[in-house]
Image 1 (cartoon, helix red, strand yellow):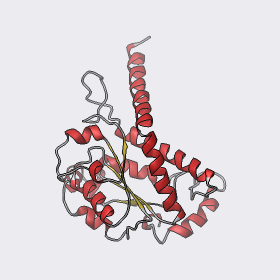
Image 2: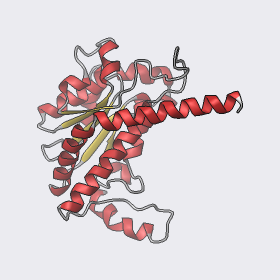
Image 3: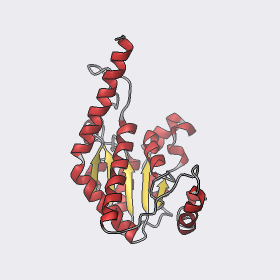
Length: 246
């Protein structure tokens, strides 16, 4: 066996072990979140998803995705995207007031649910998103790392986990890197762990909806036969409320 094979195997085990911890630690919270989302679907509400920096990868995972919920509205600002400026995206996440600007036209209500993805969960943007949603009566699901938040500087005076309605913990270590195990400097795991958490939620949601004979508004892939036709009704129903579907 070559050293490259051993290295690859070790890293694969790191990821598999991490995802197992994520699933076990969030078992109860996932049930609670699935109930929140199902109630929102039944009330014809919106599931809003927000993040900054690389947490926007999680937002992309939730939106207009094959098998994903059609009632998802992504909430973001171009300044928060690293590809539009890496340094400026970090500055934007740390700037107080941007959350209010981003939420201004969303019309948050009690029958909606806001997901805020932020592994550190300490910067003004994600924290202020959660605070404003809670003030509007909208439940907030924090997808964050409790361990990373505990050691990060509290730039907003509190943390996302402390103000959210429910917390889903991606169990990401401070610094995000996972390899090599003794002194990790590479192989960030937050994107993998957060996408896994979201899809664990989708599975719970599907099962709960099936039990209650509720039809979920789920996208079909546009690249399979009949996909466009299957999505047409969903587009008609949600396009006026989700500008990003245009």
